[in-house]
Image (cartoon, rainbow, N blue to C red; front, side):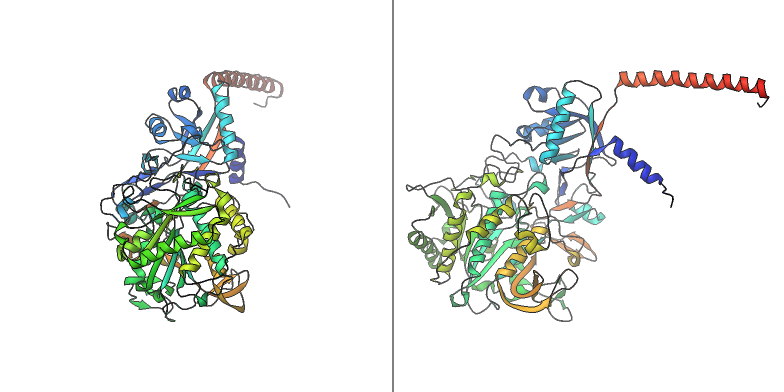
Length: 629
């Protein structure tokens, strides 16, 4: 059989000889709300330029025109980015092969202030912020993985020596959306922010007892969304909450006085999307048209109606695990101290007093742990820190609550909403004691007297999984995936429609874990990707389980699906959307230069004249000898 080569294959071979792609790249994308657009976009067809490395003040002063600027980690901040992008450059690559040597946050000083509990918040929680993530950039900007950063630094260093041929790059990340969320939603060029939250109860049926909620945020963000690990801001709390659930999977929870409900809310960094939607639905949801089995609602489209069994009036206590990964305050015994935050107006609330006493008693019960707690001074810190609890308090401010943090006042997180909020930002040495303390606390609040014995190995491996690499043993077990690489906690987008909502790998992972831990009955049914479980069941490791665990939409209350399109209906809620794009890519290539091009031109002309002369002479010779021409 004769092997044929198509034109497309030939072009591909030529393209591969000219260009080579960077492997791990993370684009800055464009986001929009009802009034503005932020983020980055390239031109259609890609931005080209010569690679230029900025790793010193001197190199920053000499940025050439039309360059692709390579920023060392220490030069990736709002001041530098504004300076270089205001000039005539073509794009930016950000290196991650060396750590940033100073504390920094690209977020705002008071995150989510427009959507929280206070109408006019005054406290600046994040003093390290310079709002870089909320700027607008007219060019593509990419973060590079470690190996690609090493390679890009080598190219930039080589170009600095002035040798030919120079290295250049093509950056492709054209964003379709423009102007604001109203415009791009109408044109179909963007999708609403959000995803799926997850909540779970150990009780098969809620409604008989009051509820103790244990909650944590699910998502994080960063300038490059695909690098938003959020180790301290989000992931550590997830590890602790799931480890608490793992502990209670070995406890007889039916003997408790309260129903335990664990929840992680998604989209919280973009206006408390998940918690707002959950509180709204459990208090105001009205189905206009049910599906055939009454387990789903067709209008508004809602697949899982399990939340209808959740009685908001029965919520007695809320304990939120917020940023708890690195408590810097120590007591006189050298123990790490977590901060307890609550509304000053609730101080005399009977349930609030009882909740604080549970914390105090648990500390006394566990004197040998290396962690403890203390209340925040309300005269110094007059507001609750940004938290999902705010959403519940807006519905009922008298609910007894405690937002647990590692900071007494301003954030101690040195890299909030940064690509540098990694596992190195965490005090992992207190993980086991943290789980022990809070699992014991939850048991005591719920009326239990159980011996609490957490699985330290599980917590440690889960910490690795959620802060360093999805290749840990639990991820493929719970999600039927073998993903490898950074565990991004970015919320992502809802999807094209309510019936086609996306579920991130992270949300699926958490759902599967909670399902398994809260399972109250197994079945003989076999399940996989092709064979699903019955309504109310979930698939784990090939078997169907009965578990009171549910996904819940994290779609903004300000964006509705009307006549086949998402549209903004209430600007008092979050209206963030993300632009559509076709693809993104970073390609390197060697560039020509004028002297070399002149040499090639001259030799080409010489060769052309020589060939033309040979043809002329040959033609005359053949014509005379053979009279052929």
